[in-house]
Image (cartoon, rainbow, N blue to C red; front, side, top):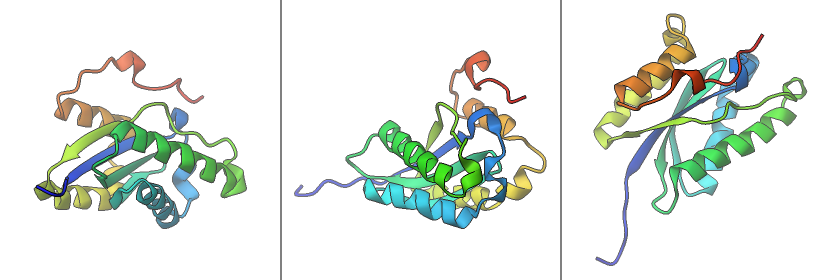
Length: 154
């Protein structure tokens, strides 16, 4: 076969450090466009994005020559630098350490997109921490709850 092909969709989730609601007053469309640009530079394609005041969900098609950990690290690093500069009151912005990423089959993409579009409503009833743990449990991932979060914000 002369070419190599892949269709790997990932649903990545990561939060702000200490779950500070830094994203409450930010233009989400602008943030999502910026995140999409970072993904595009790595050969990936942002399919959908969502989140709350303290976290982001990204559904993206992974480029066949990219590692998920490197892509997410790049997205978090570049976006945190951008967020610290825009707007100025976000100079203390940081993402939490770590992330979660889940594979999504092509037939599951519409379901994830629907989930992402309902994030505002969803988080009226469930916190980011509850959502994150539920994803880990649903996907059968083992985790130590004592090391799941950075220090609590006081």
